[in-house]
Image 1: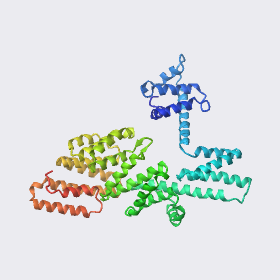
Image 2 (image 1 turned 180 degrees about the vertical axis):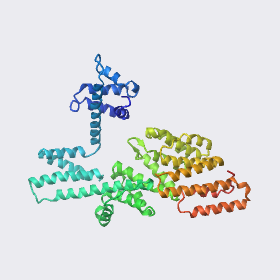
Image 3 (image 1 turned 30 degrees about the vertical axis):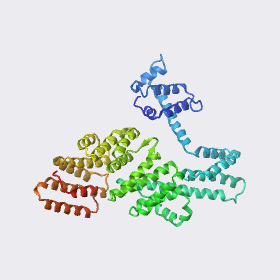
Image 4 (image 1 turned 90 degrees about the vertical axis):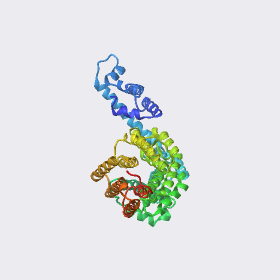
Length: 485
């Protein structure tokens, strides 16, 4: 029982939400079964301190003292409590949506023919919507459903020729669909760029044509224009005009966006900079670092109090490469506990290793990196590349060449990497191997001959169209006095 889904759900609840759930279960409107409430009290009492004590027999003895053990009764109570938990999460979610409770009240009034409530509360909701500066999908959905109720009520009972409410219903239904379609296409297109995934975007071209042909009509709809601009930056990454528009939105429109939209705007702005950095445009590093620090100050990198392990990694990597060592170390420690619990150790150890590497503390870097577990492709690629650079700095040629070959085989066999990603990594490994061999045999060359070999290698790297981490290879080719590796 201590490993049941119910136990895990309760463990994951924050203290405030545990108390709210207790009040929910104690409410006679939702639950009139006393033993179910007693089970919750017992589980909350022991779940953090002694979860192993929560055996079914122990629970039965506590709830039914002196009675012969019946496992089915415990099963039933757990089932009742789990259903209450699921209902509780639905109510909590409902309260977080700023209009849904008011909207559902109106729709319930319409369905029960309580038209005085419909008209009175409808006017109040219309006023709130007019005053709302945030026009996100919740806003459009609420406006659509409100005008649906008011329009059909008016047409059925009063004036069938009245069109204003029903026209607003249609317009806001379109806007709701457009913003949701664009938002999801942005996320899935970004996913297809980063990972080996593909999606069929039905009606997207028609939708984009509609938006482009009616730009004057949509220019005041911030959410639609934001996701439209993000999508353009994903589709046409080599055109900086779309990214500049994203920066303008960051500067001018943040207060008029929902929290979710604000996080999306920052996230896609970050990702654009990252793609440009990976393409060799290092000027974007400083810009990206400032974007991250700004996002941290505004709390937009935290979702439900947690930071993504990839945002954590990107910020730490940038800080270390820009030699903001003190700030980066403080960041790693301050936000360690805000990582998802099952990712904390991997994320912290990898990024600590990267910080040590940049501080030229190579043995400490190896110690941290060897603690990283390859839980997914990203960790495998990032950690292996960092290990490769660390062995290079330590001049451990044998370990370095072995790692290059092992890494090459991993990349070739990996099915989750795109063809372009594989080509980028195999090109890097090919050039890296040549660089390592040259440096290892540096003493067999004259200074002039070695310089010529390195210059020739640098030209080949420069000319290659797809090389991951090209900047590092070029940097090592241009070292004035190469050390033997």
